[in-house]
Image 1 (cartoon, rainbow, N blue to C red):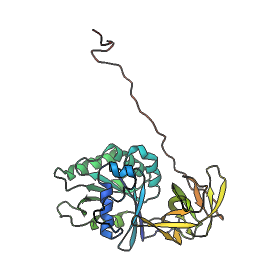
Image 2: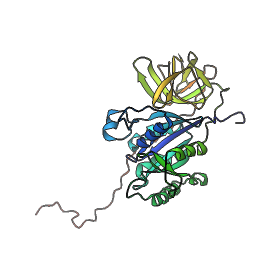
Image 3: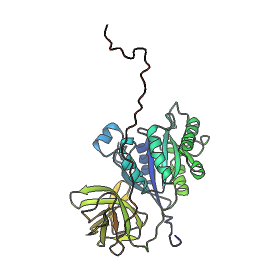
Image 4: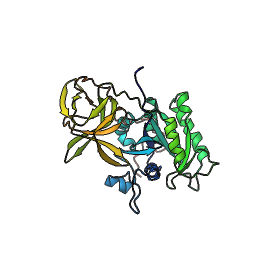
Length: 329
């Protein structure tokens, strides 16, 4: 639309990776070097907050983090790295304008990477490929880049998506580089690539407020909390809102609290606008996939279609030499 503008001070990015490819460690390094989170002595791997996540070293529930770099707010969404949480992944990808595809410098792209990458390409998101763990003794980054390119071709990526930037990194050491011949020093090459290659979100504060609810949380003090990205307009504490149900009916509420992200901490804010990823309290009847909107324009946003769980099986003839025998003497 001609009246739509982009917020050049904001980037929304999701991180997708196979389990144990260093996603959480990389995010920790970004937060450390931008001063977005003050670490206690010995504290590490801070995005894994669920007890099972800490025990297993995997991400089950999506978390949001926010950092400030060169006057640009970068919202990072840490998505589940396991295919069993596919519905969570698909909802998260709707909140961002680009993705960091994190690939282990030895293991290469894995099946779960393929699943999430396919979803992001279908949504026309532009990827940044991060070859992580280049500090491993057996790392083979050049081969992994070729494998990643082949995967993009297999998933029918567009020419524009195939022209992805590559960043080589070590989340453990907190270093990155755009060229393996240049010794990595810090995470600035990755941060600069995010700013230059991820599109700023479309944001028109003049339009009526609309937000698609992608996650729900519960707080013992403020009740149900809706998490999502504001698609249109602005919102302030005290504003009246409506939830547009899937059947077209509406229910009314009032914004009692708005929460934004600073590092990994949620902080209260008086207002937010299109492009922001926020948590909103004040409507106790809203559900995932529904639209929160201005009462003056109670229009639903397109809902997220999530693939139904399926099982694939192949049935074939038994060609074993022992076919038909019961194992008795």
